[in-house]
Image (cartoon, rainbow, N blue to C red; front, side, top):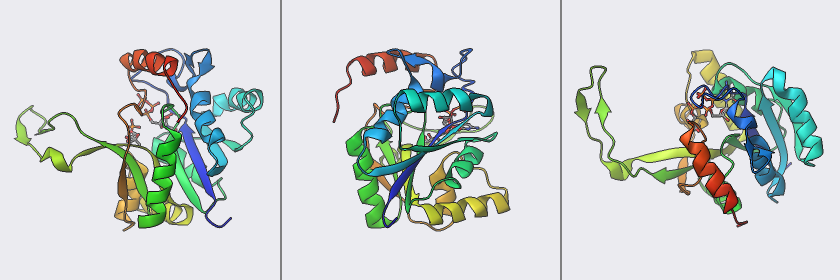
Length: 230
Ligand SMILES: Nc1ccn([C@@H]2O[C@H](COP(=O)(O)OP(=O)(O)OP(=O)(O)O)[C@@H](O)[C@H]2O)c(=O)n1
Ligand SMILES: C[C@](O)(CO)[C@H](O)COP(=O)(O)O
């Protein structure tokens, strides 16, 4: 148990921005569902001892079948998610039994093994970590009418990805507090931050995109065809 590392892979979303009939995590990439590509990265990684997969209630059976077919024996549980990502993560966390947890989006299949190592090392060193990349564009804060309000200094802006790595007990406490306070965040770190957990960024790669809209699928096809093991 000491310093054991588990992963919660969330895949209970509907993929409305992708707009496909099939939920994006189940679309095929080189003949294999995207969620399987993601699970395989964690299955292969020597740090990871246990994986919890969170899916839609109606997808549990097919996901359990893929766990068998693709020999994903680190997947210890496939559990139903909730209406928001945060609710899905919370359910996954409650089914995990490791000291550390990496929360990862099921639709980020291009995370590298070396990035998982770097995230874990940073979390051990500083308390918690998130994989991230410096923003490439200039970012502006804009009001509801389209009026530009400010231009934050880009040097302090990072686009946040997953995995996000925490001590499981600390993240669960942060999730309990968020539920109590009715706080809804778009990532796990925002819940940890408000609980006073120090979180550090680990610089990752622009390839670790979250497959969100249709044009991301072209990138995914290209990247999967040219993927090498790191
Ligand atoms: N209720 C939810 C919502 C999202 N997710 C998961 O969280 C990850 C990131 O979410 P996002 O890309 O926003 O996925 P969707 O919610 O499916 O997309 P959309 O917002 O376009 O509907 C995805 O792997 C998604 O399946 C989840 O497990 N449960
Ligand atoms: C967690 C996340 O992937 C970090 O970029 C992101 O915040 C998820 O947000 P979404 O609203 O579910 O796309």
